[in-house]
Image (cartoon, rainbow over all chains, first blue to last red; front, top):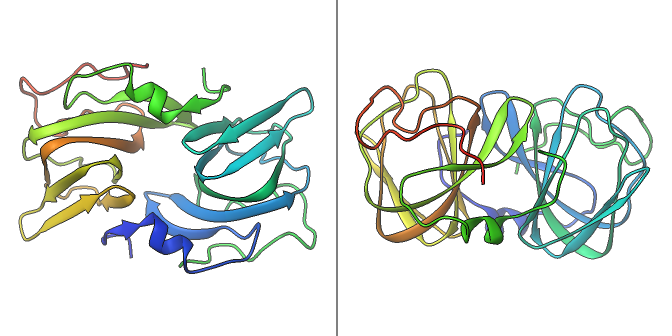
Length: 121
Length: 121
């Protein structure tokens, strides 16, 4: 499954829902996921791992308890493990996430934004 | 060091040498590195880890013993651990690499293309 060439833009064309990361590749026990985000996500944290955000197309922000980080195309941010954060995008934004296999999108919370994990496209 | 916003294009402007990956971010014990590649690299393998290539701008190929994979902007490839490969780019190509901290660029070989590891920009 991880031995083929992957085109990031083609993968983005395969889904439209927001806040629902899809796995496109695995490296060791880490996964590369694509997501389209729009509107507000929830406050959450990942107690066991850092989480990488890379903005592929658009603008988004990550709110922390003490600051708001604005990100746009080509920006990358590492959310340290155990740090509460709330992603937000005014307009639809396409992002790549990198994190260990098994990370739940809503972290320490489970609610109606919690998606099925490990869905590949 | 990993708690700040990182702009990938700005980082590429900070170096010009070929085949010399620079670290721009760490997530847990993994590193994100940028490299400019042109010409031939050497045959090598990483016995302990997969290695991710993401083409940020340009074209390159990864030669394997049984096939040659052509990659261009927006393409991604996971080289499985223990698989011999030889990167090549006819024109300069900008790439991102993702791999565990401590991976040597020439893998199981050491020669004049082996660079100092863990250099941040």
